[in-house]
Length: 204
Length: 371
Image (cartoon, rainbow over all chains, first blue to last red; front, side, top):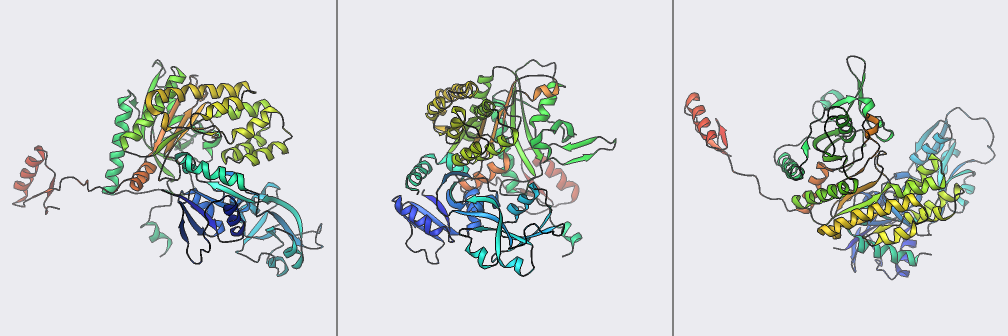
């Protein structure tokens, strides 16, 4: 039985492909609309980035590649043996430029795709917040009056700038991780161990 | 559908209901496991369904306990765990019994858990506790029993992943780390995230051989041979080295008994209930993404109840065993003999006939047709 690898079709796809190719492992040329591709002893699942940890946690996939940001949000119980070094970004709190230090209402409204991470971040600081959950284009929220600030991932900070926002603080740094199902790690030790070693040697 | 009628149709999230073939399969699993426990001379104990909440007041369990106020005002809790309950009973009701005490149980515990696959609020556990006696012998014995249960159930591709909390705790103590840092380290250790462990240590300004050993510990997993690496990596810290030596003694005994292929080493395994003090292990099998069961040594728990004594135990989750067997095995047409219809020739006559057939051991269906 071949190992099953869950990958996201999102921003980590390019980095995952070059890593697999550098490591001399098979990778589907163009999955197109196919969601499951079997290739030379590996089976690939292409799913939404937020779903990769779920497929791995339940053991539907033996391993997968997910961003640390996604793992923080899902809180999935999986092993994370390798930092793969690509897909580097930061989870930050950002708010409209020039607002720093100004008085605000007692409850801060935070728009984000990461409600758990955002909630925990402000809870730790004793700030009461109302988390507004969005699926995308989070940068728009403060300008349109939906929220006071946002918690989102940034790579270069360009998107923040273009939307009149500035970073207030960093919540966490993120990069792509190899994640492994706990049972597969032990019950399929040899195959999983080989994959971890091969990818570990090939990472940038 | 409005709230009230919905409540009259569905069961609340986290609890389950089993009927017919599914219930029968679960009963068979329970019978197989219990017969193994009895074969190793363990005595059944049927503990109470609820007890004073204080019994379960360990940090890991308290937050997941369903508690309520009794009629006399005392705080009670539905049992979230058998181990604490059995420790209390061994220290109290069984105080006159000389160790080693071997007890097994089979029943439900209730814990508040967000429902997920194989993780319900109502968990059916089949397990045993070995209290007192020689610790290494007891460790080896319960692991052998766990193995026999899996063999008896016909489960394929299983492993016992063995760890020892003394390795992690020994290193954390040697570095004098505070509880918050230790907690963060434990989380990264459980994730086998070596770089994460390194980052937490750097944040706490911890360095030196014990810090390097902690980073290594996150990757110390594999077959029995990885214990050699572990012994070398942890020799800087006597407590951690002792943990590895204990683990090796148990792993060697299992290998000598023919279970060597079934042993996996996982020294980064630090999670589990906070009363564990030594060996910890989890049972994994192909086809199920999470453990089927597990256990560990808890040498300080009985002192809480006034009878200090080393102890070790393990349990298998019935829900998970059932799920695993369903995935590993083709459904069998094992529905048994069909029932005999008892002809309806007047109520008294039919009842007499039914009783006669029952006395002869037949399965009867009274007042109806054969299935």
